[in-house]
Each structure stands twice: as C-alpha cells, then as structure tokens.
Length: 249
Image 1: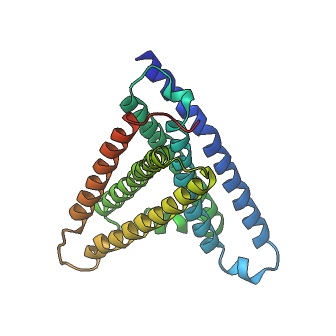
Image 2 (image 1 turned 90 degrees about the vertical axis):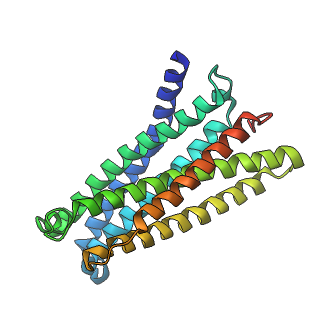
Image 3 (image 1 turned 180 degrees about the vertical axis):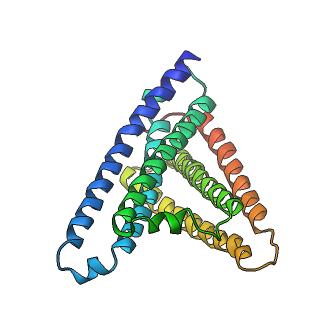
C-alpha cells in the first residue's frame, strides 16, 4: 500500500510540472494577445474574444496530448515497472493521477479563459457564460459527462494502442523505434481528433432539446458507446501490460 501511495504521489508531481509549464505558456500567450490588441492592428482588435476562445481550445487539447505522452512514458519505464506493485495498480494509478491533474489543469485554464474574456467583455462575460436565462443545468451536466468520457476514452485508447505497438515490436523486432513513435503519435492524434469531433457533434445534438420539444436518446447512447470503448481499452491494456515481456527502457 505504501508503495502504491508513493508511486501515485510521484506520478502526480511528475505530471504536475509539465502541466504547470503549459499553463504558464498560456498565460504568457494571453498577455501577448492583450498587448497586441492595444496596437493599431485591425484584425486583433476586431476579434480578441475569438482569439481567446481559439487559444483556450488549443490548450485544452494540448493538455490531453501532454498527459497521453506522460502516461505512455510511465508504462514503458522500468522506473515504475520495477516497483513492487501489480501491473493493474500501476495502470489505474497512472490513469487516476492523470484525471486529477487534468481536472486541475481545466480549472486553472477556465480561470485564465474567463479572465481574458472579462478583460474585453467585463460583466457581459458572466451573462453569456453563467447567467443565461436559457441555460439548463441538466444540459451542462450532460456536456461535462460527455467531455469526461471522451477524455478517458482518449487516454485509455492511446494506452491500448501504445501497448499493442510494443507487443508487435517485441514480436517482429522492429529496429526503427522512431518510426514506431511517429506512427503512434499519428494514430493518437487522428483518433483524438475523431473522438473530439464526434463528441462535439453529439453534444450539439443533445442540446437540440433546448430549441425543440422532441425528446431523444442520444445522450445515453453516446455514454454507452464511450463506456464500452473505455472498458475494451482498459481490459485490453491490462492484458497486454501484464503479458509484456520487457519494456522499451
């Protein structure tokens, strides 16, 4: 138990540093955008809110990508694999710490985003994001649930792909590790973009009941698909992890 807690704490701190660096870069970027809008730049002065939205979106996705790479480094490193804990404990500890770190990241990122919008919109930002008479708390919870499931699916799916590629590499003895690394990242980027696009599309469909009285079952169907994908990724990843003969490093 002490070994598991020690690993969890070390994983949190190892992921905490790059995430904080990412947040710092975002703050600097927001400061640069605000500084640029003070000059006579028609483009930047006309669309500052749009730039802030684009910036926040990019960094939310970047946070997922960074944690994906950190997750794979943990599972392929002897530093953690040789600690006297089971493979399943390492797997779930890795997943849980990533979830906690990403929650922290989203919280701070949201503060940065709302703060940057407040600079341009003042109190209107709260009217549009919080005090909207049409907003429905149920819809907000559904959106958060779909986003959460999508993020977990990306993490567990990327881990499954990573372990599967390691298994294939051990079997075929592929010499070019750089090629595998490139293929892995391309697959993860493509899969992540597909999941994000699909999730956003389904979220828009779920929100249609704000404008129509037609009930739909899209939300439970999307949740079911995500959960099935997560379970397949977890069980497949655990199987490959426990049967992996050796790590890359």
